[in-house]
Image (cartoon, rainbow, N blue to C red):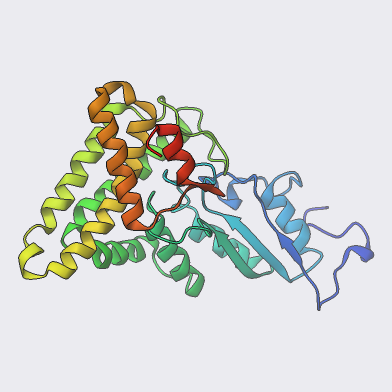
Length: 278
């Protein structure tokens, strides 16, 4: 490696009919490839360029999910477009960007918005990310789009804060469910905004009940992340009767929305057992 990456031996050059699968599982959610030192072979950017010196056929497997916490958000929204652009410039011929691939129903943690964004950018990476996201929120949440989009952006800003000012790292199996990352008053302020979203669609309950029910479920799905954290971290803030009601309502909503996993390969039935509501 002298200025530009070169194979250490001609035998390292891969047959044009073959390629490599590059899966940087240790990459952090809020860090773009370009944030790493391109001359360092120990980081994802250097490794990518090193392999690109050996082949133009790189199949990339990215990770856009904390696999130990499906209910919680994982912020790759701010780096995905830049990463896709660099990948296209360095021999990438295919991108698999894994989120909750084993989920069957609704997803929370803004993963429905993420799935739409990834799909759109893989089709046309020249699109403006904010335009794509606003288009999704307008269509998906209707009259509640302003409330939900502002909530989404504020939470992503909070995620960025705990990465830059606290010690959160953004790993795909990181323990993020800690009180220092999720103050109770912050979570309750988020729930107040969920209530505002419900209120925003109230006028169409009678005029367009089908659309109302559709958007209501989508807001409800996103409320689960905040309710989950409150139950897990702040159960002591409830009396026994209220806590039981919160847990059973959470389970009922998961069943209604088809949510069956709380982590990769972990059924929500394990959660119900831990909560004493199995």
